Amino acid sequence: ERTLDDSANRRTILPESFLICDELLQVMNKLVKNMTINHEAIQHNLEIYAPFACTERVMMALSKKGADRQETHERLRNHAMTAWQAVQHGKKNPLTSLLKKDDFILQHLTADEVESLSEVSAYTGIAPSASRELAKRIKNLIKIS
Image 1 (cartoon, rainbow, N blue to C red):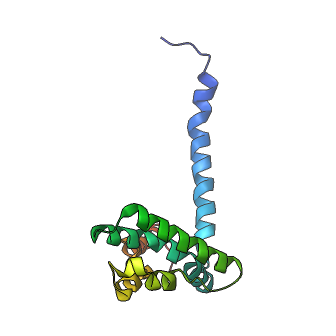
Image 2: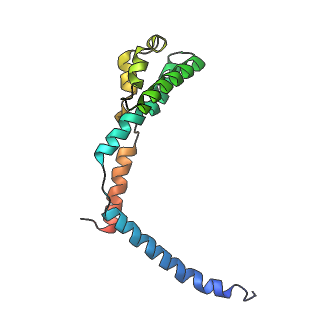
Image 3: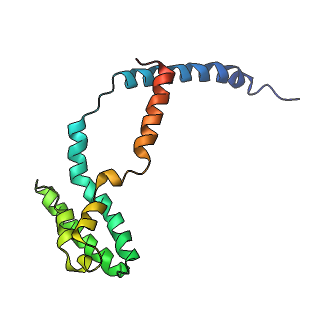
């Protein structure tokens, strides 16, 4: 047996849940149909911020080659701070160039290796294929032609 002190809640929860779900789907459908992708803005943001993210790969490569982790971290941090100052003053992000000129880094990696580690296209993992697959599934679900 149960009391009736929550019966009103139980009668409204399911119908209201379906109404909420319907509204969410309608709003999502409208957002996806009207979505635009600004490739220039994406490229601009990648040019500014991607070199900072890629320092992780440089640090891991240096560690694998036997470089002192603390020294590596400190050098990358200093170069990142210098690059950030340049970005803040409206200049192009110089981080990759700074790393390719650092004597400590060049003891363990070539400038070409640093450049390769800084390539954004190599830093995305499975994101491109996963994004395409998700977009295809969503497109099929909402029947966008």
